[in-house]
Image (cartoon, rainbow, N blue to C red; front, side, top):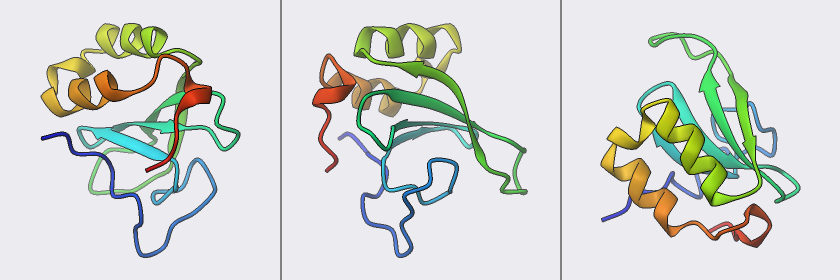
Length: 102
């Protein structure tokens, strides 16, 4: 089973750094997540600015237009050791512009 980020939280936002950004695709651990940018042109790998229990904000670390590019970055950071993250990435289209929010 592949667990995407809840597509409709109680308070969704259209601001990419927000916790409940409506374009969130998957979280990897407590400090990493992948989103689709507001324009639908890039996958963005974000890291939370502070460690739990503090919330902080999500800050873009890498910007990829292709699934292969995103896989490369995630592999380099060891994020593919999370089976759910790898499973979600596998389901993404080859290009970010072809991604459709669930």
